[in-house]
Image (tube, rainbow, N blue to C red):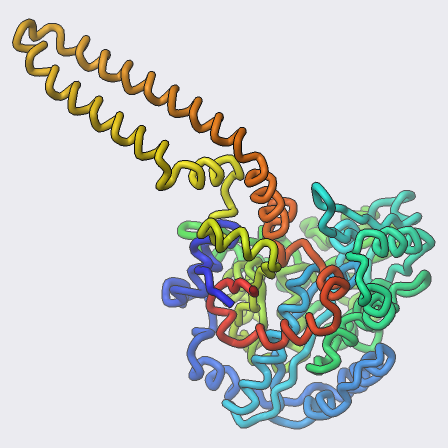
Length: 534
């Protein structure tokens, strides 16, 4: 494995790379330094209550239904003093991109470490976000193709009738999943592992299964050797537990909005505000889909149906129909940490950025803000790509630039062509410097002409150099193809590999041993930098 600084990879936000490498510059926006043991002790001292019996019972029922053997961990959460390390993600098709697995493994490693360090039970919990209504975000599977990325997109028949389907986690897969499964089999590497991997780890993706259930069973299978408690917050037994916070979020929406807005404005002066603050942070789901509730002066208006509710009516509906309400990205972390004794949250780059906006909101809600721990971030570099990188002394950061730029640098750096043009440029400059005094001594008004002549010589030399570079590139078409192929493997679709490719691709290629490799690779040290897994 090799490490690459986040600061060298522009695809990571400046705020995130600063958080990982210079936390002190962002100290005002977070509860504590994620690198310091004292930060976790400080948060842990303020957390002592076990989870509610209702939540514990729901977790037992949920995980049993998904075949996730974590009863011991859930029982631990019932005891006073128990803590949770939480992470979460949307319920993506076929388990979502690689970083979902990186999050889960990081949460397990951190929980193991803190259990020893804090001398208290610390349980890893994965919060499955199925409440969002954006089907496009969870219904696409990307796989490497011969020449470009293959996009497999699940089409819901209901989505064709109306765009907003409500909470996607509750949607059941229709007949189009059969088409996706067939395309997936064809697109995956034809190895001895492919069939067994699809059956053992991804067999839950069947017509009639919900997005949440299929995702949960898949993640449970992938994490079998490193148990992780899975949680569905949309569960009818869980949702009522958030009623007090939902009600307060509506009744005090002006104060909550002001706190997030002021923090966001301060943050944006040096970094950026990941989330745009909204007037309210609750959605309501009915036959019109999942839509925001917007203040109208006397109460709230359903942005989908246009229904108007007084403040008292809205509060009453929360108490009687809690299952119809769901938090947006701002309120969601507070719901999570009101239900769980969260000592740390394992976050991706975007999440670290939006947590920076929420410290004052946690204070408003009187909820302990957890330590925000960066998830492991990895790029898997397969043997063919490794050979090319070693041969030409390239690294991940080099492959961010255009292939033609990289090719030009490789062809010219240290070559006889580069040396010849450097010598020619030096000789030209010396000739111009020697000529200038003689010209100006003869006639001072000829100084501009002398400078123009030198510029013309340099321009002509530059044009010749460009023609030579083009000729060299034509002779090295094979290298160009290799660079493009490697760039597509490391930055599929122009994005970081971990954000695009799913684990199913590598599992089909290398078998279950791939999971063992990941479990060894994801340590707490991998959160300090981006890691190249060779």
